[in-house]
Length: 199
Image 1 (tube, rainbow, N blue to C red):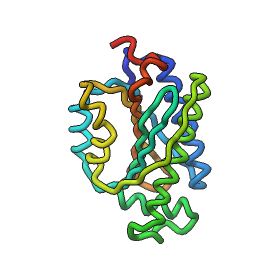
Image 2 (cartoon, one colour; image 1 turned 120 degrees about the vertical axis):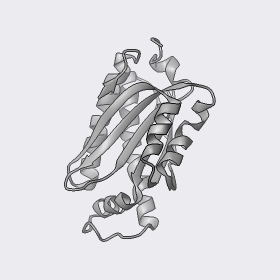
Image 3 (cartoon, rainbow, N blue to C red; image 1 turned 90 degrees about the horizontal axis):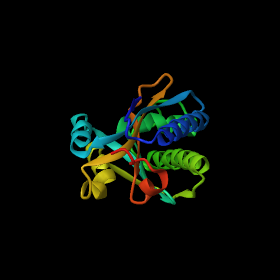
Image 4 (cartoon, helix red, strand yellow; image 1 turned 135 degrees about the vertical axis):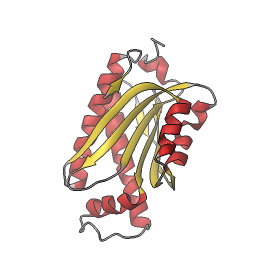
């Protein structure tokens, strides 16, 4: 995991704890071993990270959720479209390969996974920091990964050159899924969590 010395250590530890919890939840949900790896908790240059995401641009389906409360975050979970078919089969307990096209079951699966993962993460942040956090209803969007990521950072990009980004990747046993999860603190979070004290 990449880390930045300017990021409050408490934020890094809680991020690690929240990703561990989301791995446990996803494993139970899919009834197969799922590992969500915390790739980084870092201040990243908006231009550089956007270019990096766009280098591997692919059609994806994503779940956007606002984690509102004392320390608001934006949450984005997205998966390559073909991999969403595998997730759907695992989620509803049918043979992998059954789902072959995008339909309401695929959309519902991505929405529900995003909802459950964001709830697990917000519960950890709320408990560890003793704050109030609540996931708002998710919205599901089908587009290219670069577009989904740009939507995540759009408001922040108008105000900042660098953002604190918590980035995770997925590994699910016996599959080659391409799943990504991002947490982006927004206005108000810095004051509560103190993550920007060193920059």
